[in-house]
Amino acid sequence: MRRMKPKEAPKKEKTTEIEEEKDVMVLHISNFERALSENKYLLVEFCKRTVEGIVEWMKRRSGPGALVLDSPDSAAQFIDSHKIAVVGFFDDLEGEAAKVFKEVVLDETDTEFALSSSPEVFQKYEVKANSAVLFKKFDDGRADFALSEDGKLDKTNFTSFIKQNSLELIIPFKQEMLFIVIDVTESLSHVLSYFGVSPSDAPTARIINMESGKKFNIPTEDLTPESLTQLCQEVVDGYCQALLSV
View 1 (spheres, rainbow, N blue to C red):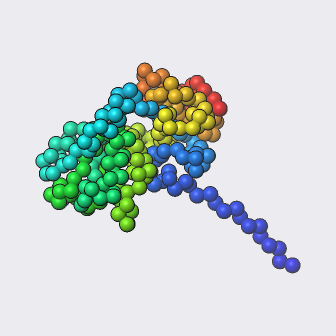
View 2 (cartoon, one colour):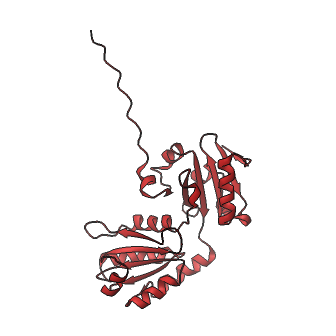
View 3 (cartoon, rainbow, N blue to C red):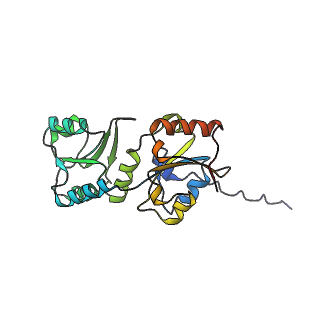
């Protein structure tokens, strides 16, 4: 009698959100557990809306909203004036996609936004109508967001795109750590408690070794790109003493 070979368990593929977002992700209920299990190191940045952000939110609600760029010169001046600038390119500034863009403008107060329906501006930045570009003075310089085939702009996906691409990556550690951004004003309490963080701690950061369960932090007053890079190096090299543990 021929013996049947036992079926192999299907291999668990890497979470698609992690791959698509180029080593930076926003945690959701659907990807939280797998994000923890698939990566040796997590670098988690915790942020929150500031008083200035709330004031800016109120101003945008009562003001004209996003600036309209009607020429290549005005577009260049706007983009050059900001470290991060998001421009929506629409053939109809009153269309449905443009309306969703304007809704995002009202909520994302840490980012500067503008709109354009000028063919000359489209040509200058090599874009097609009904698209958006996040221009930044670091990393690749820009990140392009394409609308769906039916021309619709998904508010949730677009907001995540902005948050993910606004984070300046620590290049030497892209292949060793998964970078995560968590807004403490929106996150569930059990997510924060897992990382040993309370809303009052933000802005802060944690590095977690998922194999050992050890957690490493950095005081908020010392949180700079340089100090965070140094912490990453010390953790990877095994020189840093864990301050927290699971």
